[in-house]
Image 1 (cartoon, rainbow, N blue to C red):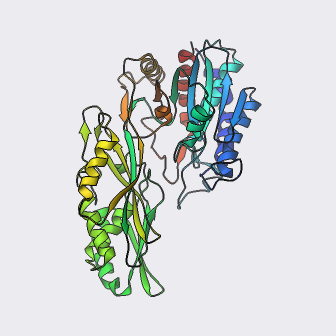
Image 2: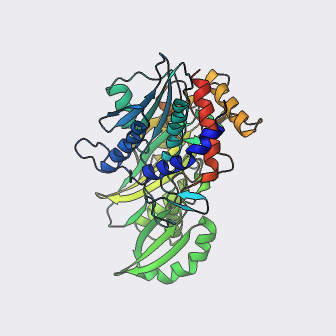
Length: 458
């Protein structure tokens, strides 16, 4: 259908609503009564539902776990799944990440890509269809979760506790175009060792993000040796280093570059930067032992080969290996690891190999969290329809459905795929500082999602 005029008329309202939603700091925080993921996540969820109500849609908030927006009366349901929670921001932003600003045609703010911007576009697309009174045979339901970035209790509560019937066909705008018809298994766990000595080693903030910062406290007598090695370490790891005095010790800091754990090669891991430095100092203590283990079994290997878990298949490629966080707590040192497992393997296949590698080392395997892979055939109605929409709108007739390492809500349902929203010529800044949305992409996003909803709901 011809939506051009409505898209142009709606653009400023759309930008205002994206800003409105992004302005809510919805990083998950401590639960309070009636707000299982903290006040910010609850406020963001209600903000989205309020916007929908102002457009005349029926909404429901399911105890601040999740909510939905509905339009139409069909017996079958087309689902659009997204989330309003966001990952922590880190430092070094061009603006306050929760006071979004337009700079040189780009809207900066945490969540403009992941996932507040795309879900707001889908909401506005539904509004345009409603305003134009376009007849649809299926009911359209926007399902919004409030803790997708952590453990998905939101959709578990929605589908399993509240017993909301799942849509027959769905997509989630929480990845990249053209379409992800399969997603690798997500395997998160911790490598844990007991400590006898006091040490301070901290870095990263989440399993599913490449650590952009880490630091360690070292003996003051290492200052000259550290200064002599800084350039060498920077060349090897890609990190930037800083060394300063802190009381009677030295604080060695590494500054990397954040990226999504599904694509660790797009980032620079600051934890690896610190471990390389410590290992090169050849210290005869627990910290030295830990660093040596790290560089021998992990190091700069992003595919898990040194840990014995270098799995690969023709459908989805190689396993990815990311160290997202390191911390010392309660007499233990903990590395938090994220693996994306090829679709023809089970996560337990990876677990067995890792546990075998850890035998006779100081580290133990603990706290596994498993989300198995998904696969929707390329010749399904869902995949073929969405691929046709993408090709028709963009003119990219050679585009093909892809496999991804990311973990989207497509895993929550049968017959659901990740569809957009990042275009091939857009930088993927999800989970990174200075996340921005190029405003000239909004009309393309809108055309794609309008056509997708219209064709799938017929």
